[in-house]
Length: 189
Image 1: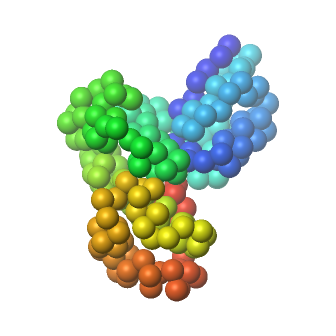
Image 2: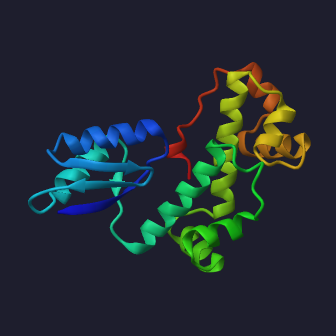
Image 3: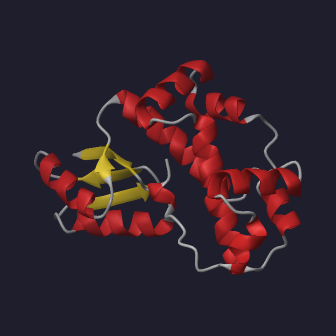
């Protein structure tokens, strides 16, 4: 039997590796793992509670209802856009992109997202972008101008204002104090 499991908080390739290891440890044959889901083959009924227990230990969880699955899908889309630097080349507004990818009305998704995630889609996007800015500042391989362009900001000033509003300090101060603790992208929003 083949089953697709929807999994919360998967945001990177390391997450895919950990989920693969977790599911394999339960003697499930892992067919495929993508951000947000895993396809497993099994002979008997799935030990969902055991799967949930092992995933929770590594910061993941199963998504079982449609609302949560849709919210997780939106989070995955945003994380992927920010981490892949896809915001600079995006031809659509974020709302249009989300509608296109989910095949649902953006107002409906936005309302569900706010009710379920406890923040708006825009706030979630901003938090993801700011963490990506921190990451790029710590790497010290790009100028602030390049970072602003890469993350789809209209100007360095706009990025700097938003960064200061979210962190309480301008990007230049953060860069000097690069020892500031960064958040894992899975713990944002």
